[in-house]
Image (cartoon, rainbow over all chains, first blue to last red; front, side):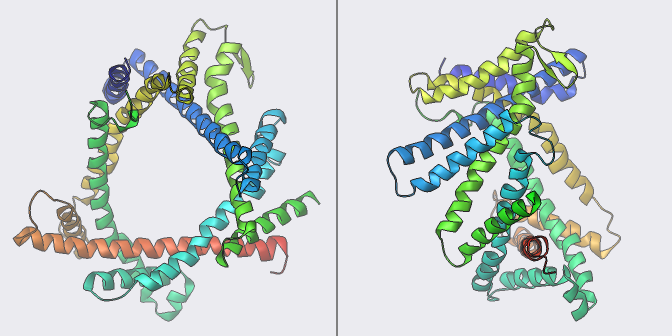
Length: 209
Length: 211
């Protein structure tokens, strides 16, 4: 019951979802749509579970007076504020509502800025890592430089062939390599999915009995 | 007035995050912890109203979504209890004695999505890619695409030693892979720079009105 029953459920759900593509009967398609809704609902419950864990971690820090408990308080207050605005403010999803304003003016700027920070770190990492010592590293360096120059107006100003070379790199050698990687990843994903359905891969059950 | 206040909040938070370029500091930590709380709360509300309310709460407790009344009026309302119960079972992991019950929900979730992905993965990631690369050898570009794909696949083929013809093909694969990684790197850097330009434009145009 502790290990075999979940494995059986996994097998039945996986097998049904895999074969329903080939059975266009209304009953099967109705079951498929219902199961899909159940899976999406489970995802929402799993997200709630993650939020409960987040609250537990930060509550623990505040309760035990950890050094950075002030920041934990910020996280919990922000979480409560968004939940309050989302659940108790009418028309929470409307554009211009306080809930939407918090998302547009707090979450979006911080996330965009964090991603843009990577521009500095990627550039400094490249400066240290890119050394044209071998043929392979030289190819990587040259391709990266041509693509970077070809994506901005200054590339065209330096030489009109740089944007053309950029397009060729992206559409020919890059595409060939990406297709090879994609086929390999696809086969790997299928093998892993089959291992999960057949109960060979059981890491998702965690440890214990 | 409200717009100015909200823009100023966004600008201050943007500068707080950029202060990390100097070193880790309280302003950055504040912004970091704030965004964790805000985004967790945001997605919790979105998931609840998009999935839990229409699929569990509304059918069971007879709620109205839009102009449509759904719930106990339908003879199949009890089916909505199943995802609700499965979802609640996930929370048994907080009680070590009953934690194993949560595996039932996980089993359906993991197995369901594993099965759901099988055919689309085969179609989109394998068959379509092979089909798109099955080109006539009528141009240099087509030859490059075919040789590049064969070389890349050979490089990732570990069942035989890379010697002889296999070695040569694998070497060609490395060349294509390096050019591909370089192109991806350049593309990523430029997308990050584009984001940086967007943030600087927000500060100088939307907030300070300098440009």
